[in-house]
Length: 295
Image 1 (cartoon, rainbow, N blue to C red):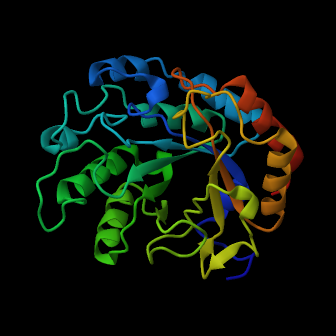
Image 2: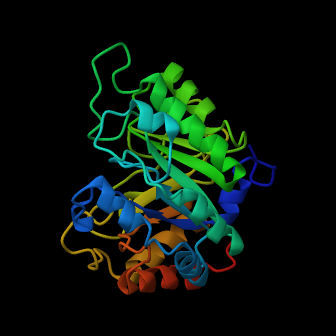
């Protein structure tokens, strides 16, 4: 694959860098007492204001969680029927649909985070596929069909290396958008984890050690890094507004990887209303200013 050839990942390459949100009820920082309360919190998510923040700092896309813990951030007939969890199992608001619409107004893109197996706290009977029951991939398919081309990529966490299951997940996630990009996370790093993916999961807690040797990590596999600006993934600590790196370090890391042909996604702790804390917004703005026009 040559850098000037048309490729399915071109839109991601041109986007250059983006932001991830672990917006989940299971986060200690969110302090959610019940699924009903999570519904109330999700209703306060200001999609338009977030899209404005991302556009202002120059980010190209948002990677947003469907769920790590129930409830799902959107309605699903399949999940409500089969998931053995406290009700409601899903939010009444289709959060990803609303965010995708808001991002589109700013010419930004939405990608979705899902777990490879059922989300945490889902009680599953033991069987041939205890972690990836058919109804879970049916849930992904239901969501994909509803969202269609408004979701242009998926990041699947917890890959177990079973390509038959990977294929089932891939078909489900691409049911509504055949051109959707996929990455399967595990093992961590920048290698190919599945024949069905077209960008690297790139999960690393140590971004200073990331090395990009060009756009392609493997044949037709876009090099991509995902790491966090806080002290862990999402708002999981009691210090949600305390970045672990100084701004110049973050700017230099990002710029160097982009110059080498890579894509960079930074996870930041979301506030309950879906906005980005000013401390992290300052770092993201500095990135955007440094790399503006690089693609």
